[in-house]
Image (tube, rainbow, N blue to C red):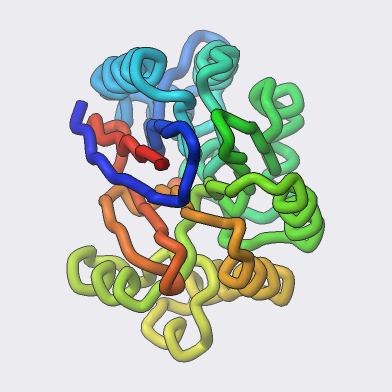
Length: 277
Ligand SMILES: [Fe+2]
């Protein structure tokens, strides 16, 4: 595994360490799964994914208060992947919030919206045995709050829930799959990755101009999403954001006091240790 290290100074009495892991993309299928899932599993299978995940879990258990996984634990919904993910998430040292692939039936085959997500959620047996759409856990004086934004949008009920977490009075570390728009990250993405979009939440119309029509429709923020971003940027209790989805590592400041950490793909072994002081 490859370990990135960061320190966040927020005035804690005792340091807290989080291991941020994202985008493991486990790709398994067994006799219960259909031919298309087997074809996906064959194409995307890589035993290193499970090897690195085991290393990440072992490292976190040894060195960190919590492993924070920001989604795409599985590459697609199959019986074999769901069983594996449910088994992994029984480990109480792991905090999870879902990504787009955790609901994907056949990668890239359909318009993915909340109805599509709920269909997969029901098929998994009400998700993966942990809260999927909003999750919070206190570890050593910080409140880790996970919010599902896997399809580039937030909902008003998630703002309400986040406000209730903030009211608990602890510093908040946010965890979600899709990073928020930030100019240098947007520029970096277009410079270094040959894509027709940047997969960031909250791009305004000017920044969506470079997108293909499909990606602009998919990623254009709605009113609740913009309200959530305004709230996150204005709430001083929120100290950092952990995200993934982009499969490369990047760090930048969303506001003068709020860092956003994008961590690269765990399928490549990457993890980020955040020491909070
Ligand atoms: Fe993703």
